[in-house]
Length: 78
Length: 306
Image (tube, rainbow over all chains, first blue to last red; front, side, top):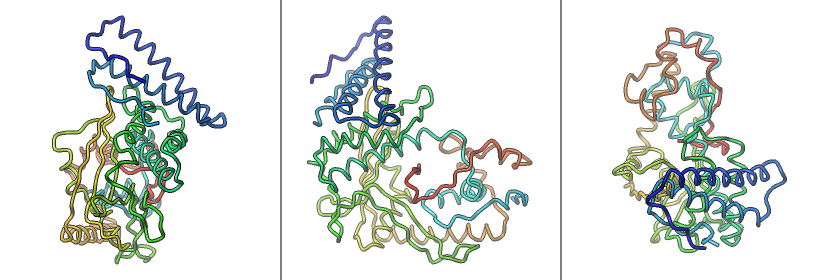
């Protein structure tokens, strides 16, 4: 998986969309956390999905801060 | 400073000491509030919780990989489950970068930076054949508890005893927001790490080096930095003598029931002493209901030291 391009010039519209996207990603990760804590645990596939979501969130947050830094995706460990 | 009998009645001199407890003896009043009465802020510190969760996750991954011989993928999958269980339902304060998502990402990023397959520090294999992926110690001191007359215990736990270039080292991880200038120098006189080194030597492990792996959790990235410190034997011996002097001092303070205040940097360091309202009040006991009681035990895995 390749990292999407990061953002140097962000408009207010971009920021608003990213903020919404980040909230959706956080909600999805939280659902997985809930399942691990109170819903009988996560399967291997669900953990991998959580890692994918965390990676997307990390990329979004990096973009929001106008970062030009890039890092290999978290899944590249696998 | 003398405390009213209503406060003294609930105070217990700790039997198990670690570097953070000994550090607090620089202000005997702080020692009394935090470690004899167990006063703690009602809200648990995000730094303690995030640091403890991260360390727990790293330990779980290492145990899976080195002890249970799982693949790296399975070690990480299981490690994140352990991390979630430790983090629990805790919600970070608004605006804190050390939230569940960033600290989770930091856990995976740590093993990207220090892949166990190729990490230049590998765990030391103990005499029983198991890798030292966690080092917990409790060592009796030649000073007795002022009330029970049993030897006081010096205790602690570090993340790993490792081998680097055929030399043994203590490895410990520290999470933070940033790396200030000369970050590595911050640790060269940190009693916590010299104490780990001394403790390892008591178990016949010839350790004289300590590696602190810093993980800065920021909004846009996660950064890693290492501090490698060599402690010559004279420094370790000097630390031990100083440590005993401090323990003896605080035992004598406890016996006298007269606790001097620090009136110095300790009141403002780490964002300000949480007990400052007590110290600036003529009747400190009226503030007690605004604190939680959490007695810090250095051997308790459920908590993490700063």
